Image (cartoon, rainbow, N blue to C red; front, side):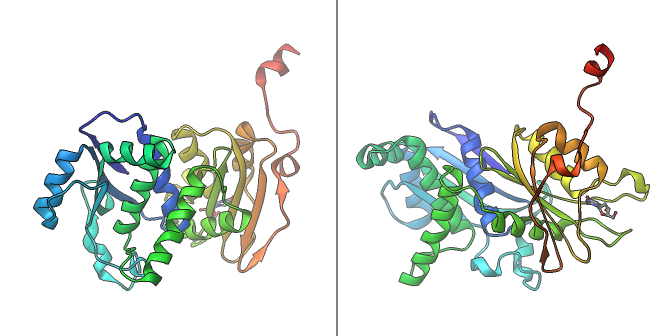
Amino acid sequence: MIMIERQVGCSVPDEVFQQAAAACFLSMGISRPCALSLLLTDNARIRDINHTWRGMDQATDVLSFPSLSLAPDRLFNQDDPASLEAWDSETGAFYLGDIIISVDKAQEQSAQLGHGLRREMLYLFVHGLCHLLGFDHETREDQLHMRKQEELTLQAVTGELTPDDDQLLQAARAARAQAYVPYSNYRVGAALLCEDGRVFTGCNVENISYGLTNCAERTAVFKAVSEGAQRFEAIAIAADQTAPWPCGACRQVMSEFAPKLRVLVTWDGEQSEMTSLDRLLPHSFLSFQEDRNG
Ligand code: THU
């Protein structure tokens, strides 16, 4: 969740930043809810902030103020209580910090570099986000590490690189961590790849009234649809002990949006052959109107 404040006009819509953050979290295997603030401002204001907080009396393109000072590999490590300090009970998310971008600078730089404002804003945002996630460029090694993460994120967002099957399977495995399974103790994670390159993950959420349980696949589908995505390419489903083939209810729900969805299943180090939803659910229920009329 990004709280965006716009002090100046900027044609880049909020969704661009939301998608970039989602891609960055996905590629880092972060499935915890995270929040951050983004301020889009001008040269005068960023200069002010730079002066007040960093003693540097000059405008710059992007500033980031991480709320945690943890290296990326220690972030959200269960054994590291420092991560918990960022928990914000008001938003129900880990507060990563603040990013400030000068739209004036972004405009100047995009003209100099000969690419659009959207591309430049995206780069500056991803750079700031990587800092919030513990990346730095103090040493040559750190710089290369950070650059790699920036590249991965930018490629995913600009559609140059949609996650491959291995990445999708990995995202499904990571999503198991959030499963709420006090009754079955059977953790399922799903990762749904949309045509626009976005990936929505989901886990199973059980209920003491067992029938109200929501499977991981439907959680992912409902998250996607509620964020405006309805065209899906593939789903990866992961569990621990046995193959988590989607249940009948999930097959029907998925087939409403993508009857030929590619389905990948993984468990316990095993992986199924890729199959498609029309093979798992032939003769799905498609229309009550045709049946009635015909
Ligand atoms: N479950 C899924 O999440 N996906 C499936 O396709 C089958 C079953 C969950 C529901 C329940 O929480 C647990 O697995 C045991 O049935």
